[in-house]
Image (tube, rainbow, N blue to C red):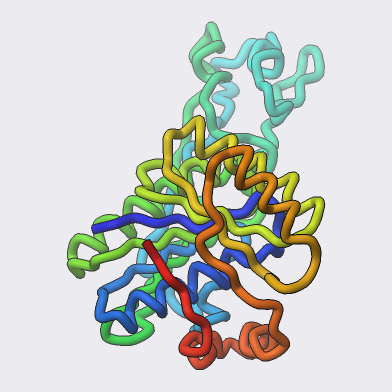
Length: 280
């Protein structure tokens, strides 16, 4: 099984569009494909495929700290070690923990000299599975509102997708990451055979492409560039980044009103046949 990731530091460059088109293209070539929507804060691949996220098939979990008041001496050490500023302490009062800021790292529990903090497991997100057709499965992760660090959610959703991919004996796992280069994106990229860095021919697109290619270089993952909205803007901006990192532009998706319409109406599957994607 090959694992390809579609990623883009700048939001809105078309990484989800490309991920869906790639999955459809591989399926048309007779391959079995699992598409993983790892943008757990805002999954949308199901919309592009005109699907609905109905009942979750599984859940993700995360541990959050709780104060054991019978043991707490109100020293405030837990608040001092919290890098997320998720613990508020007033002298001679019990600390207050804000879960919406907490990353669940457990530093407060380790630092507490009185063992007054315990970690409690809670549901942090949901996992959905859609079968688009006989050769395409879609796994989507969705975090609960207010979760500060979604990297652990992505990791668990990805593990579920990998197990399902083995069960279904798919040929390709396509991972659609969140925008940016934070922990949730890194979790999605780890273990990929190749990353398609999706960008657009604008100064900001070129700038953010360089950031993403710097990350994939550090991770040691082979990369190729997908130029979305080709035909407008200044392609030379992307070509300069391509030369600087020695990463080729292998896919170009045209700036096309019909594509925008298919995107907005959830009909990319109908449009996919009109775009030629040459995938190495």
